[in-house]
Image 1 (spheres, rainbow, N blue to C red):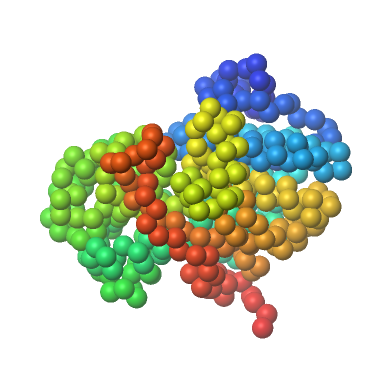
Image 2 (cartoon, rainbow, N blue to C red):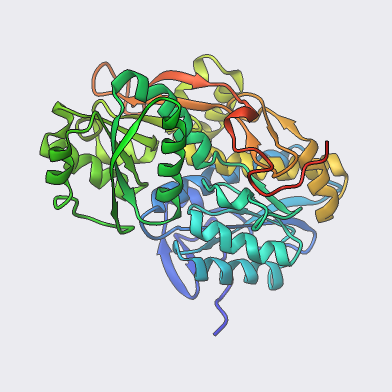
Length: 415
């Protein structure tokens, strides 16, 4: 059975996905039906499931990039259009929706994903059909030669870079005996690998890597073992609702009294959902925090556009990736003076940009976006308002040296 096209209309109160209504915030609505003379960007993200809050913010921010492009004249009379699909956090569903976007809806490009697993399936479909895919979710594998192509770009941070930055900040300060509570899929595995590799140079010791299924609600069975190991640092290598639930239960169990709790990615949406008490004292990495606007003009400009569009609220870290992923592709269309995938790929490879957080560019060998990693700690006191949830502790500057080498990723590099 062929699923019906997702249709957006300002008068609708739901996104229609596969004939069924999925309730979302009205702010996500407002993208018109596909037009024949449009630059179409497919946007598969998990609107339902454990990462839905982050995905919905990605849509909100991506729409701002579309609006900016259109209001500034588009390209050769063509306006951009965002076609959002729910990949349900399932690799098979993600592949099906992506194939539908390419073959039925005739999208020019694809941006999206919020899982290491779904982005690989989306990438495989796009790669085989020579459609540019700009991924906005963390993954190490997507840049490796076996999964990569001329059409593969990675706007998000990757686990090696993120975990490495957090390890370099936290392990020297809080201790070198480490326990990992790890979501048992690619994201968790890659994050732990990133911590362990960075930790080797710091003398860190892994006491245990305790794995739990994606979407786990109860972590109580793991906590006594973690406590008995007496780690200096507990790493919550999970995401979304998993991170919220783990933070709450670790706090309630009293582990923070003797152990520093850190996360490779400390999500703004997770902190908002979990609250100040659950996340008190937890630090981690992030690609972006809206509070950087005091020092970075591009952050202030982006935040103000988001506030204006969404009733004064501020964008999340993963929301900002949705904005950047779409804006980069549309800028490359203008630079290439074409919507041809090869020409736009070449333009993306040459792009140097500062959309919201400082200077970025794509590494030539694997199309990984080189960017800063922000180290933040959750606040529980002296909050100016409900959005003021993190203190920025440090910013690790963009540096290719913090990535795995091109040769290690399997890419042949000419000398």
